[in-house]
Each structure stands twice: as structure tokens, then as C-alpha cells.
Amino acid sequence: MDPVSIPSPAFAIDRSARVYVAGHRGLAGSAIWRHLEASGFVNLLGATSSELDLRDRPEVFAFMRESRPDVVIDAAARVGGILANSTYPADFLSDNLQMQLNIMDAANSVDVDRLLFLGSSCIYPKYAPQPIKETALLTGALEPTNDAYAIAKIAGIMQVQSYRRQHGRHWISAMPTNLYGPGDNFHPQNSHVLPSLIRRFDEAKREGASEVVIWGSGTPRREFLHVDDLASAVLFLLENYDSSDTINIGVGTDLPIRGLAELIARTVGFSGELVQDTSKPDGTPQKLLDVSRLSALGWHSSIELEQGVASTYKWFLANSGHVRAK
Image (tube, rainbow, N blue to C red; front, side, top):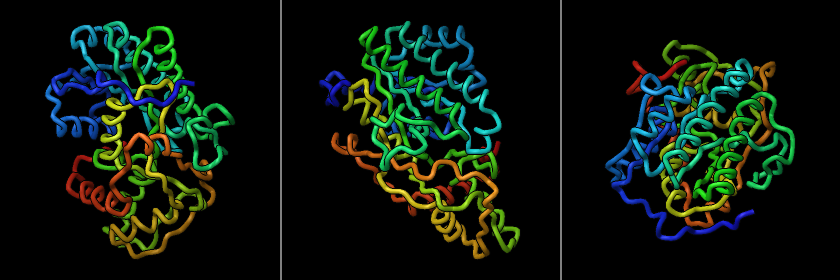
């Protein structure tokens, strides 16, 4: 196991460096793009899915040869909630494996020495001790509702470690907890729990509904990180971390899904009843990340959940005509 280390000044990234953000239109990627712009980066590279299919290996290699990035941030992924992961496991496994393999292989082919791969906290065992340390990886069975996606992300971690060992690359991987914020997918069934509840409570309020049904028992506990905090952590890690060990990104606190639903109901202004549909799956009982490694380096989240939910709902209302809902 590599020691956690503060890199040399060579990892202070020049603001004129060419930085490719894969998935720059997604929830995480768009936040990273905004943060890099605000931090003074002037040569950001991005391509939409219609311009570049990351599953197409020749296309990705051609893009890398033409753009010649100095730094690569892999925030591209096919993502979804419990229903989407359970319904399309083959797609989640295949698409994510292809995208990350192509990006990393192509990055290596043009001598990219600094790359950050974004994974997911679902890589950890379903019953990992809480809070979950990075060392819990591969110590137990995965949550079956999203195991295909988790396996793809675990493979990405291994690919980063393999490029470090074989080619001496200064590549790193980071595992964020559950993300939310502007640019999220707000589909009422296929999205993640927080944006899904925002949409459903808003619709219930507009329609004058007397109740909103929440999937599962409401007892599983989850941790939520605003994407603007994630973006801050990504740049921090690129400039301050160099190890083959993956590193967690989170806030260090969690709450029950029922508590999250009640917070969103208050934020939206829905005063009806919250009904639990216990026929729906709960998923992992608890998924709280141990963020002590990142905290020891000097980074901490700054956006409280209540503040983040309020700003996300405000964004949802302002962009309701064209939010992602698929």
C-alpha cells in the first residue's frame, strides 16, 4: 500500500494547462468545469456525447491525439438510482467499463501523467463497518441492486493502480459519496433519491396531492455531498494527493432517507403525508464514508445539506423547462 503523500510542487497545476473533463455536461463534470473556470483555468477541454462517444475506442484515441491534454479528469459515467441499476445491469457494466478503459488507455497513449478517476461509494461491501474506510474495498459482498455498476468502478480503480505500477503514472482515484446539486437527473423513478424526491414533492405540491409515497422503509442512512464541494475536492486532490490508494470524498455525516424526505418536503413546502412503500427495496442499510484521510490533507466540505437542498430546489424551479428527466 502506498503511503498517503503530499505531492511535490510539480502537482501544482498551471492554470494554462489543457485539462480534459470527460463527462463535462453531467452532474459531477459540469460542477468540476465551473470550479476550474472559477479557479482560473483557461484551456478546458470537453466533448458532448454527440460529439464523442466514449464507448467508441478509435474515436476516443483520435480525440486524445488531437487535443493532447495535460490533465484528465474522468467524471464520465452511466449512472442511475436503484431501479435503473436493477433493470439495466448489463448496460451499466458494459458502458462504464468501455468508457473508462478507453479514456485511460488513450490518455496513456498521449503521455498524460496526471489523471483523476471518479468512482462511487457503492464500490464498498454492503455490510462494511461504518463509517467506511478505503481499506474496506473487496472485503465483502456488494449490494446486489447496483453490483454491476460497482464492479465497473472497482475495475477503474484497478486500472489506475495498474498504470501507476506498469507505467509510473501519477494517476489517482477518488470515491465520492452520494452527489446532488444543479444539473442532476430529476426523473421520479430512474434518478437518485434526492433529486427524485425534489421532483415528486414539487409535483405533489402543484397538484394539491395529499400524500407522497417514498420507496422502502425510510430507515437506510445516506450521506450527501453537494457537487460544488466535490468539484473543490477534485482540484484539491489533483494538486495535493499522489497514491495508488483510492480516497473517499464526503461530508462525514448521514441521515435516514425518511429524514431526507422530511427535509425536502419542508424545503418545497409540501404539507401532506409521507407514506413508506415497504415493497420497494431499501438498498444498503448505511453508507457513510470515513473521510479522515482527506480531512488530514486539509480539505473539508463547506455546504450544509439544508443549504444545498434549498439551492438545488431553487435551481430546479429556475430550470424546470429543461432539467434532465430520463
